[in-house]
Length: 180
Image (cartoon, rainbow, N blue to C red):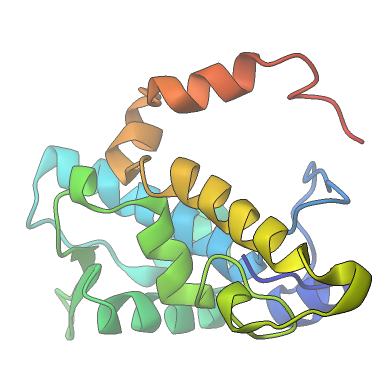
């Protein structure tokens, strides 16, 4: 996931949402967070009627997302084939795929690029020498760990709260909910 500083989050997305906690070790971009929240609104609409269109301003208000920023996010999601849109007075947005067929990894990749990048490069493209010789393997293992979680959770899983056992097992690990 793309790491951005708090000042960049405020500058890009307006004021940070109240109640958001920061974890010094993991950064989820405002774009990925807002994109997930928008898609979960569309997943709820999909559950009622897969063809139902939802206006951008409705999503913006429901999730407290700046409308202009949201429109850019929805454009990227449309280009990635996750969202469909229709213009006009009766227009809006809808999921272009069943929520169970959209993984969190799909969303992050559509909005932020590769799940794990080191200084903008893919871990397998890095070359370390000397004492750092095996660092590349660590970064690849981190990416594999992220894939293990994010590729196996769908929008439907999050919308219904039916998270896969590999995720609930991680949540139950001692210290999982503690900041470090």
